[in-house]
Length: 614
Image (cartoon, rainbow, N blue to C red; front, side, top):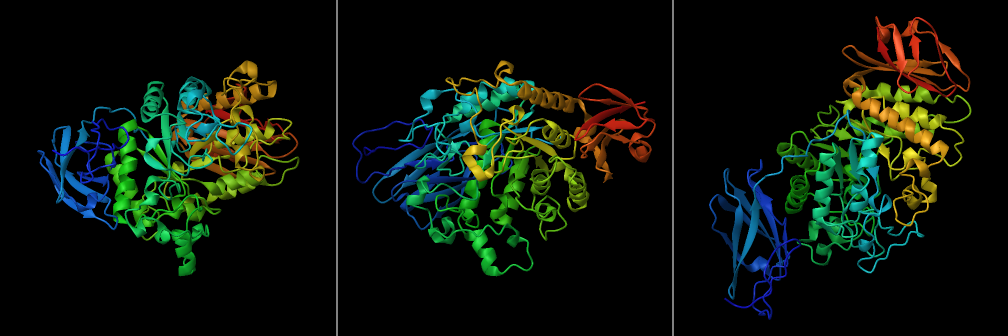
């Protein structure tokens, strides 16, 4: 056998033999690094990359493993090996034999048993997601801050700050105590980009954690520990684009691997064009094929090899780390058929799993077009949980705010009244803000009236609530100030922070009041089947009063919101559909009880959340 050097893919155990021959077959990358037996889908794509590997003949001799296709592409440095894995195939090292006119080499590919049955639980309306930008939450390991010639600089809002997986791990108990059930992380995969790409959306290796956040094993430990504490983990994924420094950008498998044949063309962000019956073909094409930015080239999911690669990558992370859900970035920018296939294949493997898509639209109808079983689309989109931006914009623009009653509760009512357009309105992700929007808390808030009313509504209306990190300690920031200002460091997350707002002693009186209010609501919500499982019934706002209920069998929660700047007495006889034979309502925050036969006085800009009883 000739001497050769095998440059291993990430995480592979291999032997390096020095002094390679110029004629030797070399493999520099294999993805995915491994697979598992007894998966629902029996076909596996193995991407193999190395100099002229596409010229080699590929054979496999292993019980239960047969080659379905050896796909050669434009770049002869790739070969896509498709194999079938029969039921009851035994785990082991699969010998993939490569032979060309001058050499031969056997690569031993690991196929493992599925031993970890935890996780992959999905999330639903009984959960509350807590969204974290990992670089900005907590720095548990300062040793990984400065890598790849990029140094952490907390003085620059757009630079890396050093937050990591270990920092999140160390604060899981804080989140559980707050009442969170599910942790959603902005992208954690490798972003080896000039300047740092702290946000995570310019992925340069889809199978590797960013080393400035930690290793794959550390991520697996995070999910495992979270599950042991009764928490779930949602992984932010990006299948629309990659980073311009992704390893394949210097040598793509084919010209059509990247949209517009790899030539930069900016997207027009015309997200409605995919469903707009009046859209011009050129506008729709520019939207779908244009790049999100020059630094984030758009991938072509219509390429069948890339489509399979991306689908497998999602499944690999679920099986490897046993994550419980995926939030898919720039959902509406991708090919419809690819997304439908991706959803189906993920759910075929993990029926309890959940995927939420970033369906960023101003109108309810556009988000509803994407939901599974939608009557609006000619084909089933397959998405279980769209993001309800329409409701968010109502809340962001005018709800819970001002020194006058500007009709914001009527706007909330009107938006929710459009729920007939959704196949499943309880499976919508709802949120006051997120990492791309101005925070709901404002610098000039002198009291907690907006904060409390906003949280009361978010955590009692239909849907799956998400809370952006730091909201509990009144972190503020506006989009106009820049993304870095709405993704600020959590005070106390760094060893040298002078203030620790993870601790009660590090928070102001007003921050502790806000934290305690959120905690009380979150912990109560876990016990309320009416909120987590019940239907929504509401009444059109009158005199600035909006009343609605969540109802599940005999469990009824009645919510009363007052948008007026004065206290108001509300007669209960109008709400007999909700009250029924119940006689008492107990406010979940104050524990104060009210007789339902009497008028109830609601404080100005205030709210009551009443558990009803006979």
